[in-house]
Length: 338
Image 1 (cartoon, rainbow, N blue to C red):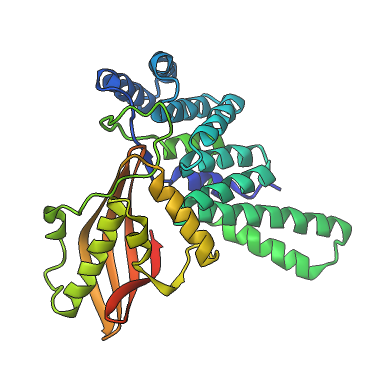
Image 2: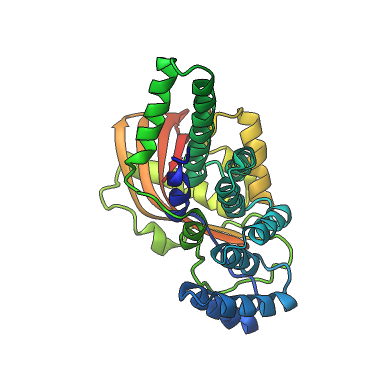
């Protein structure tokens, strides 16, 4: 039974990390023009632009990503899968190609492959909420198939009937409604045109953090005074260490009882963070509109908008840090992104 249109429609609501243009300035207009044509539904013309651009820069991440979207919109699922698969091999640290690949696999009912692709997206970006939710939908789809098979073997199993009905209800009335799988994936992941930065014919590693600009620090809530200012100082020091790619200082900002995003061990989490921070050529993390809520003398919550830019990708998230004061220092106990 086909009750999981919601998974594909969810992909249409994707608004996560955007791939940065990595071409030379002389070719910036080509990608922007291709993206504009794509948005206008002129897929053949957009593909011509992209292919022309890729002739000179075959490794460009954004152009290849856009090509995958065009192929998906054209209904060339097999070619789109090849394009996104190649991207995951050349740029394994980027979560979006894994997510798009999973949506394409799901449209073909290849749920095991979709599950593996989403797990990889989450491994590269633990706070990637879209991939987490899509993975939940995949698990639910696989569960529905198992319940359906169980009912075929035992029609009188009321417990199984109830479980299957619950899953059907969960997805049937969804606020997102129904959607055509292939086309909505594309509508969801159109990259916004951005100014290309450095040449990245090779996967650009993590990013080099730079001290948070004073202008961005001034965007902090004026109510942040006294104990709140100490908390904010710690948060800005954490962002600055990240921007400077100072892994040791960055990791020291986390409390001993820090709750890792995916429940992995602290050692595994630190290894993954070190890889993601060390790999990019440059990183810049900026914090805006920070607001501190002091729970008591040793506990606080900080909410803010975080913008992250590396040599190969860009993201903007609403983030919450749960802070704890230990030995006179405010440390991160939990980190959540929306």
